[in-house]
Length: 430
Image 1 (cartoon, one colour):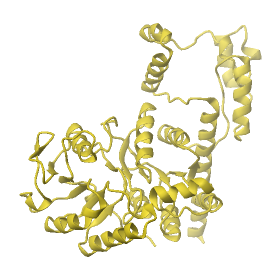
Image 2 (spheres, one colour):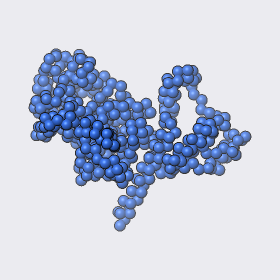
Image 3 (cartoon, rainbow, N blue to C red):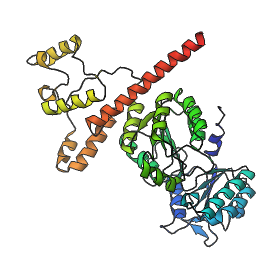
Image 4 (spheres, rainbow, N blue to C red):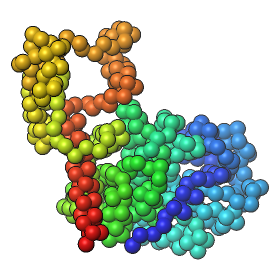
């Protein structure tokens, strides 16, 4: 049943952040999260908490959350061991905290009864205080617009893609590599064990957000399968949803439980659900990046016809095989295209085929001289040339097969949406 989750937006726009366990020691999580807030120019107040230090990274540190002079703290980042969380929640109550992010781990995911009981007590206590929990064992919120980050090397530029991830490391890797391909994010949330806030709630939240054009997710398991399906049905009718499902096989499933204590479910069921409700599924983080690139920069397409140009004869043959194997079509060149070719290459216009062998084309794209000079340093050259091409509004893929696979899924999504729209319209008429 649909619920209004727009109230989450208030939680994700904190006016003040406290870091429990803040430190000037570079090897600690408390150091990292304090550093991130400073380096990303968090737009509001930062309160380091450390009973054994007077300062952290040149900011005044407070002995406890209760000692902060403000009557209210919006968001608390917890970087202390699990055994200290219950006491911290009591302090949070005195400051009217509404959202606590638990970087803290080693609870139910360990499989130990004592840790499982502690996690349950934490949830019950937070509910009694009307407090929401993000995590535990997660990286929290990346929201560059207001200066929230969970890594140092993530872009400070925002975008229109949003995502939620049960893997904190995967979330950071995804943002980092997608940015190299020209994709930027409004908000990415790492939620891991989903003790309280989970994939269903986040999916509803992003689906309702008018600034979100695309939703990407890494999910190891759904806390409530029925509710998640309802959320997925709601979301996919409003915007594209791309899902990377972790724990698809036996060993991966066991690792998923030890990682997030998540019940993963059958992959066949996940595949069937995704197909029925129009979600786009991928198999690894590289494909997730590819898919986000396609959805970010192409308009809705339902046709499967394509023209391939580039490489020599052998490369063209392989590219044709790959694209046709993905269900895409390589039609003959149209009379309009042939007339244009006749003007450009009169000596060869009549025998050019699709795929087009670019070696016969006289007007190859010219790269800036400074890039051409870098060819001796191959890795650097590839990176710079890719950056140059992306800045020209052309988006690149590492290989023809990854491009074809991403485009096939992209087309399938828009075909599903078109068919579903017609079904809904007919229902309204009846």
